[in-house]
Image 1: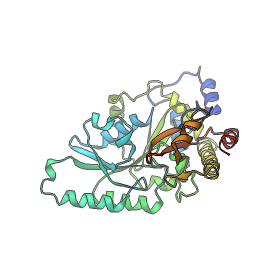
Image 2: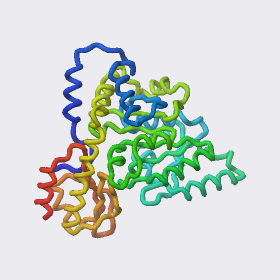
Image 3: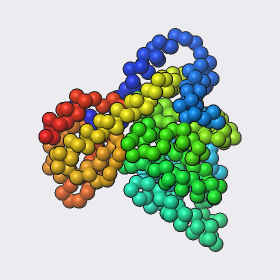
Image 4: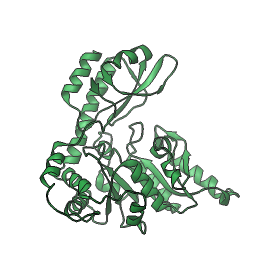
Amino acid sequence: MIDFECDYNCGAHPLIIENLVRTNETKSRTYGFDEWSYSAKEKIKQAANNNDLEIFFLNGGTQTNATVIDSFLKGYEGVVTNDCGHINVHEAGAIEAFGHKVIALSSHNGKLNKKTLENFLDEFHNDESKDHVAQPGMVYITFPTEFGTIYSKQEIENIYSICRQNDLPLYIDGARLGYGLMSDECDFDLSWLTYHCDCFYIGGTKCGALCGEAVVFTHNNAPKGFFSNIKRHGALNAKSRLIGVQFDTLFTDNLYFDISKNAIDMAKRLKDILQQAGFKFYIFSPTNQQFVIIPNEKVKELESQVVFTHWFPFDADNFVCRFVTSWATTKEEMDELEKILL
């Protein structure tokens, strides 16, 4: 069986395992004050060419989103996103569990549209009953989106401009950030991103690490008491070295970006194989997630040889299925898929 189910179905990059073993018996400080966490933070700043960053390491994406959003918002505020934003569809009500409403707007090609956001805010501010509803307190988007699409530089600038006009922080979920940045369609880099949002996180779990996400506040603007709120959310690692070593490795010698590019290179070949097999694509994705429309009979046939995700029924006779490449996808796996499909 070859596995294209997700981008975290493998352990960690060998260099990470090597460095975890190499440093295992070295005693260190804890709770984020270990030498590797400090080193990783400096390397991230260097990669972003920006020293005005505050960086914290957490374990996973849902935990990170819940902690960051809860830290930005007051009790009566909600977070604005689009209807397919990860916090709205795949986080089991984690945001609501801490008392904040997710305000979901319509999506366009998997993204939050400037006009949709503007219209919502205009309607809210002109609503005589606005004090009776959850107040919009921040904006959340994913990069790449749940459908593998990416925001352009102009699209992010437009959204960030609206956020600043309305005094709303812009937070970007970067669970697959490396795959977005290394896409041929992406017209900005990590440095540019740090100047066009208020917070984002660099996904490690889906991009080569065993676990871990790096939360980056872009203007030395971490909310007051953020460290304590990490603890409150059960997200503070006593053995912070576990994530520190991993990000120190990922941001040494361009590793994070190089292995992310592998996912994109493999996705290009994946698209070519799927297209040659006669499948139509549900949406154009320039990143590592590919969504194809497959006849129900073919889906059943493929299940015995390939692991993939059954996303949703397209119609009575076809299913939208997701195939995902990652930092660990090999040419040999692509060769095997080609044999199966062609």
